[in-house]
Amino acid sequence: MGKIGDSGLTFSAVLLAGGESRRMGRDKARLVFRDEPLWRRQIRVLRDLRLEKVFVSARTESFWWPDDTELLLDEPPSRGPLSGLKKAIEQMGTSHLLVLAVDMPFVTREQLHHLCSLATQGCGVVPMIGARAEPLGAVYPKESALDFAAALASSDFSLQALVRKLEAVGQVRMVHVLPQDEHLYRSLNSPSELDA
Image 1 (cartoon, rainbow, N blue to C red):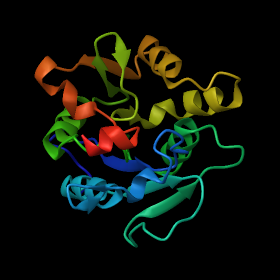
Image 2 (tube, helix red, strand yellow):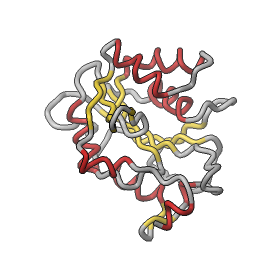
Image 3 (tube, rainbow, N blue to C red):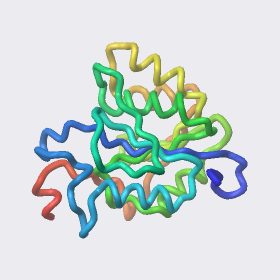
């Protein structure tokens, strides 16, 4: 349980569901996508991976998260995904953390399993689409906890900058996503995108 393949690495996951959803205008976690709320769909995908623990990261409490997940509330002032990632990495108790944003419903169990299978001891995996990293559908090692804490204590909360720093010290490896798989990392940010 919590292992992917024969790597000996262990994995927890965090579902990031704390966004303000300004463009969507409502809580993305509760949006219905293909007859299922986004949160339920994403939790199901994570459960299918048989990870050691699944966290839900949010700004405030809500009624929807399942009993078999652990809720992590952002410490105020929230700095978006960075706040949730820092807390999850500090509390996970495994060698790696798989991160999934609630508004990325096209990511498959197979794709997440593939990302985890590319992780190595002390090194995670961040997908690249063109020249841009996708830090909210990625894998981070426990060794990156200090870097997440330092980023949160700084004035730069950019995950793009942080993953480049992690790459420079060998704590993540950037992996280019095949063109036919780029759609898997698409996020839903507005009502028109949800309708489409």
